[in-house]
Length: 149
Image 1 (cartoon, rainbow, N blue to C red):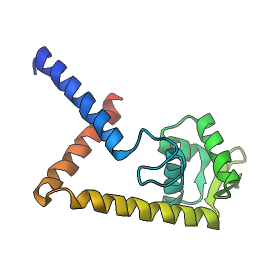
Image 2: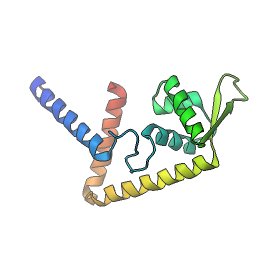
Image 3: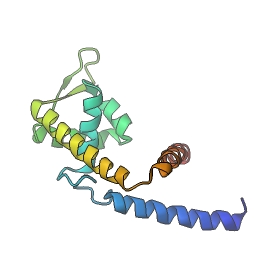
């Protein structure tokens, strides 16, 4: 690909990504894209805790791709909301294990249902023959972002 074509493609990719972020609502950090009044980082933390519990705080940081200090502050917010409990790991006294509380499980379930409904609406708007290429394109984009930063 020539430099001129690459430059145009770069600008087009930027515009498409910006448009996608805005269309999905990712530019509103205090509300999930599904319209729930929960910070995006909090919603992602709850999602990861529903996938694996207990989860070490350092592992949550890795899964969310956030600094340990950021996750520490995030966990404090989740504790304050009554959604997460933490305690020292029995296997490593320096590590903190995180678990969802009953209130946290209910909040996570509410977010999961809102997410399911949002994606159902999106899927309804996409012609069936376009689904496979879109999913493949998103996979390629994700891989490129993971490799290229």
